[in-house]
Length: 437
Image (tube, rainbow, N blue to C red; front, top):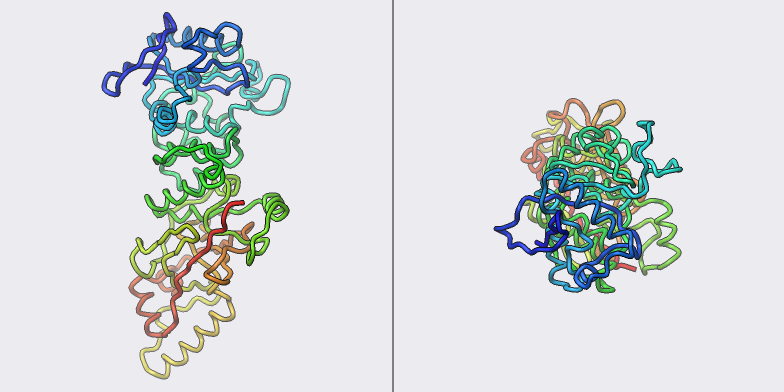
């Protein structure tokens, strides 16, 4: 790790076991004004605003009794792909392990109105810092974080401004405590925090999320990776933790319009996609999803999930009926006549409800009434497998209070017995994933 001494502003490299206590800077890069590692090494420093930012960062850190500081612009040799890859995969932990994070908002001027604490000077918009992809982990990871305006006036700490931060970012204040407390949020919720953020390079939308999900992956800025990085991140997430909220997203209508105008795929309809979202913006309305609910049992082991280049194979799931057609377990007859009647009824219900094209997730959304609503996907059968259809929508069904005597929420072993008894076929779902544009 390469650090700057806050007194003489000279660089020094430290091996992992020798890293001293240090401060760290979070900021928004200004085009053509930042001081790179090469600039620093060759002494090209004084003619850009980035040099003044480095000087002030060192001054503030020194005033807080820190001898060392890490600044991304000049402490990473970006000409080395190996060093850049290591830095990107380590960055979350560098911010988490820092003694304090100094957050510099270059477009904000301190205002006497508390409601304008993060507003761009002369504007009603919030600081650009809140719209950048990389600054999400810089907000969440540090144990201690302080904000400063464009003139380095102190604005307050993350703890002091937690309510204002919740308003600006949409992140619940319980996740703004520093460290890794936010990782208790489900995948969809964490993805929603990135939905309205941007990065200069498309690949960085995926790379800036690595620390948020405690992942590591090879870093590449090749042409092919530009379209594949976010999908590859999601596949790594599935391999590590089977959190079904990853599939709980809605494609924005303007995204569908842009997609349909820019490219076409044989056999794919306009509203179709796969299970893996094409962009973090699809999670914009997923911030209130949770995994706290009564889970549906899956047929077969959980690791029956299979991921290929063209598809995601979901574990088979019991059929789920709307509340008005749920059947109490005691109605299942134990005699041959009753067995036959029940089988006929169930087959008719399946046909009527179109349930073969619905996939229920072990993921819920809490409504304004406080009730949990199960998230379900619309699927459409086609050549080679299913496709997610109506991709701008999610089906939300209210969870009934009396779950123990509803077939739709019976225990896994009870469900297996029921379906064997009634000879209703349980489908496996091979959901195709479209190739990138």
